[in-house]
Image (cartoon, rainbow, N blue to C red; front, side):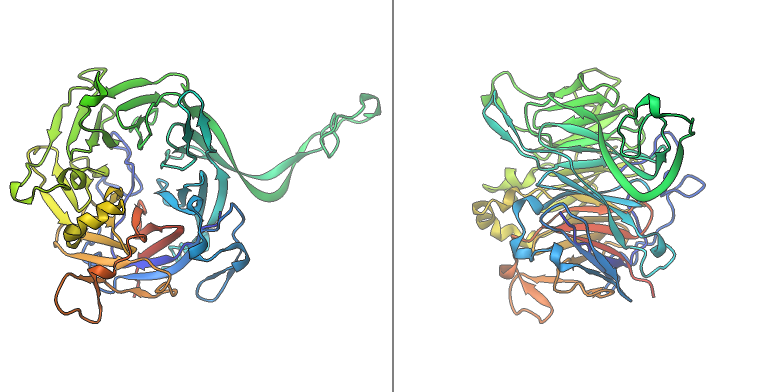
Length: 509
């Protein structure tokens, strides 16, 4: 599979790491004083602040990306690519994740493949090109399986990818499908040993009688080779589909969550996990909600949060009990009776939950809104942002075509001042928490010329439509931005649109 990645310039001074170092250790987004690096949120939601740098296409098979460097952008060898309309289900990107330094960007797809992009080293010092990435490694993470006991097929689709902090020259990441979590080691090799005494150059054993001299083996340079090897396989612990994995701030444990249970794992132990949450009722007919997402606190290794299909969030402390069926805090917004409808329960289901980097706030995404909660206030969110409220009148048709069940993700920038999430028609939204500005941008092949400034898009709900507006009836619900990621220390974001991966960076004058 080959990824097509347009890198766009993002004219916002902000960044977003997905995991934060614990116990006062400085992350790459921190200044030497330990506080988040200063970011300007003024440009994040301002017109003309995002530019296209390049675009990478996702091929239908795992193959090498052939690119020729042009004066201003890259050209992709079209022999490796198919048109967007011929993209198969297996090529659809299902997760996107930067590593802790932002040098690597990993994507997973429905075909069970992981593609890792590496940042162009030459572009780091060129402000107009610093968002350019090239294919670094591709490997098959998961294969389709069959559960003979339950007569169920297990899809190879990659649900989540999470990076571990780099400790040496190798990189480590977790990837999961519906049932199995794997720990992968990604390493480079640019030297090979030569001059063995008991083996010839092809690796075959030599006759000891023919050995007349003693040679000292040496290392010879070779073409750089990137290897991905599975180091751990964590299986047979989930009855239901895994929807979340989260690395703990102690970096010794991680948790995996499915619809009804959350398990705690040690990276060194693959045959045993600890069940820390179990909401399965004795009688399944009494089931009223399921777990939709879970994440560890960025600083406190004993604290985690999980969301439910009822729109509630529970904060748990593992110091209180080994089995955290009793939450420490319970976050829920009272429902407005005037807005009650047949679809109320469906659209209130939380699809993603994220701690802020400071650990003070929780961000949740439901179908129509993004909400920010203060850990010290459980009865209502402190901020609510309407992502696409113009779809409220379309809920009936969205229910009929199953779009109402789409699970959108959300991300913070590095200073927790800007929020980003996706929408339909390949739109994605950004909300500035300080200025209360918001902007709608589009990731599309039509306006993906290199260095092109992204123009804000507006949706017309009713009345006369302006030239630069799009009617709500013209929205393409098959094109959706479900997965996004933010670079941990720079103004670079990654946006997945079907089988295309777009990278944007801030505009530099």
